[in-house]
Amino acid sequence: MRSLTTIVLAVLALTAGCSTPAPEPFGVPPAPSTTPAPVDMTPEEIELYGPRVELPGGLLQKQLGKVAQISAPGSDDPRDWAIRIVLDSIEVDPRGCAAGIKPERGHRLLLSLRVETSEKYDPSLAGNPVFYEWSTVGPDGVSEAPASSEPTCQFDKSLPFDLRPSAKYRGQVSVGTANPAGQLVLSNLFVWDYPAP
Image 1 (tube, rainbow, N blue to C red):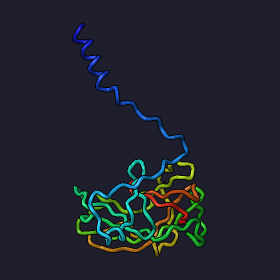
Image 2 (cartoon, rainbow, N blue to C red; image 1 turned 180 degrees about the vertical axis):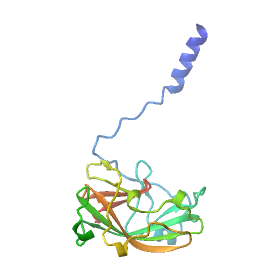
Image 3 (cartoon, one colour; image 1 turned 45 degrees about the vertical axis):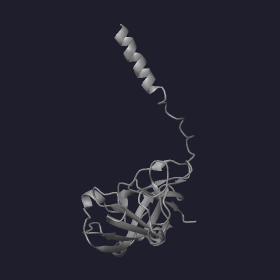
Image 4 (tube, rainbow, N blue to C red; image 1 turned 30 degrees about the vertical axis):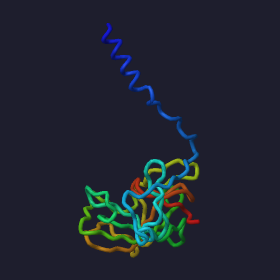
């Protein structure tokens, strides 16, 4: 009996300071915090990537025209990358898309992208910024899952579906959403505000 009491007291002592903090009120997104980059960045790198702003949950806040990149497998060094993505513009409900096909969720975002892959790019590990890699978060803070399908706006300007290592691409991706304003999320890694301020 004494050993059981000792074990119970030991468990209570170990878990005493481990309570879960109260959750944020629903619909109120937490304020972003600026954290230092894992590697000291040069002024040129800061110009390329923009300031490092990490949101709760680990998403990195990005600005239009700045590089978002995924590191090579097994590396945390930003200089050792597999794919770089630059989101140049986000158009909300653009005119002239897909011969009048209405978006499944009510609104369409047309993303203009530049993508570069390194020799270390492996599509099974680093991904591809196609429509199903994008999701949105509405002004109420509720996340929306990626659409299961989304017709492209202009086929001749679409970003290729298959990317290869050591290549550069320019194109568009169409994303369906119920949110005409909010945050655009890529692969649960990066986030952009839209419409752009």
